[in-house]
Amino acid sequence: MPAKEIKELRQSGRLEEALEMAQNELNKHPDNIWGKRNISWVYYEYIKKYAHEFDYDGFLENLTKLKELDLPENEVMVFDTAAWQIASVVFTLQKSEPIDYSKINQVFDLIKEFHYTKPSESYSLLYKAFHKGYQNWSRYLEFADWWNFENFRPEDYQKEEYNGRLIMALVEQAYIAYSKILMEGEALDAFGSQRRINRFKIEEFLPKLDVIIEAHPDYQYPPYFKAKLLLTKGDDSDVLQAFLPFAIKKRNDFWVWELMSDVFPVDDERKIACLCKALSLNSQEDFLINTRQKLAEILITKGLFDEAKTEINKIINTREGNSWRVPSNIIQWTDQPWYDTANIKSTNFEYYNRFISKAEELLYQDVDEDEVVVEFVNKDKKILNFIQDKNFYGFFGYKTLKIKPKIGDVLKIRFQNKVNRGMCKVYSAKELNIGDQSESLVLKTVSGKINIPEGKTFGFLENVFIAPDFIKNQNISDGEDITCKAILSFNKRKNEWGWRGYEII
Image (cartoon, rainbow, N blue to C red; front, side, top):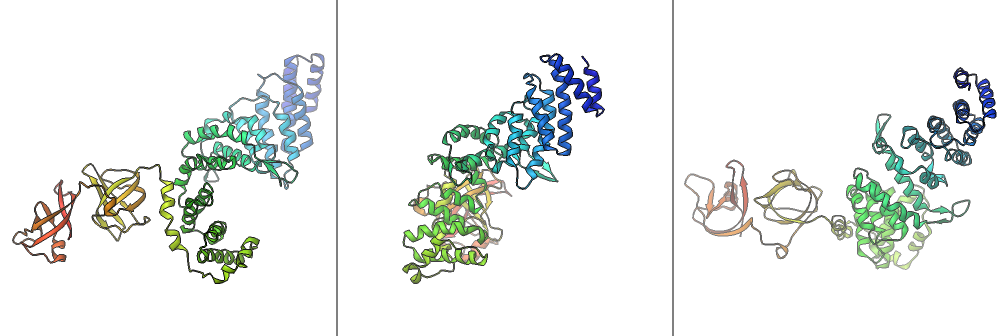
């Protein structure tokens, strides 16, 4: 067989001669695998040529001829090589305006009959090409199921560098795309105005999403889309649990709280709490109009007309300031009798603050609380030292926490990390009333005569050290009867534990 001659002809660019020789050979022996291989590589050269020139008709014609050879499954080399050219053409098609999805469908219908090495670099490139325009491609789910996410390479799970910046891992992009299409549903008409949610496919996909969430906690968005899919499916039984890992990471973004509010029914106070938390964060007004509208609607039903009018006024000012249309339902609100008599407040922050702690409780409900005592406060740096017992003590910043700590205060803390003797990070902190506190091993009250040694500025009450500034500020004299609160404290200089007075009572 003239395999060598055919190869030399096609490699020298004499494709017509190579094709004629390969075709003659195949005509003589139509079932011979070598004849099919020889002509398949000629077709590949034409595919490559037309891909480079972006001659779509020529490209499609030779892609069709390659398919019609009906090569066996173990013949993957020509298809692996052709995948690079196929990807090139699909990428080019995705750049057209508008995208001609009929051509993308034609290519997909052909190449899904081909055989590839899986996983492989060329097969992953094929996914990238078709993924590029997934948002408006009606057959994306069909393509993704055919391609099969189990065929990603280890490299596809890692972030990539592009133009000097890191971009999301291809795998995370794939799972996000699949989730979005499932959430949008299948179009039932040409315009996509009517859609149908495929709850079976959501059920089928959720366990796969769980695997990714478990194996790649560094991926930020899969937990978010799991929560959205559960909401889309109409199952809110565990949607909050699914959403929490994502929400904790993104807790300073208003839209995370707005989305969390969707988990709860209108009459659930937790819905209000989430909306109030969203509006309490520092965000651009342009982004908050939908959140304000959701809260305003609830406020109206509760008869809180001053607060509702305050939100509505901000919505109208933002929309008019951007020359945006004011929705008809908001206009209807302004026509109601209550709107004329309600007062506009400068802000609703006083109302928000009533619910913020309730919202934060939702976020950290699975994190155990620790009861600790404030041992020292640096008001300038907004840092406090705490102690639980001799085995656990440290310090953390409280600038973003809604507490006003002083020595001796008992706090309930949810720690993000518990570093003994070091700098800790905390999720939440709240001050406890005396009746809510457990019996503390690090606080006590002592009474008696204070002993201030001659020539010294410090003193002792039993075994409690009374610091010089404390004696000076309280104008305490040697031998005076006092009752003092004391806290257990570690003396770094002496490397020992002791009691230190902090308040006269």
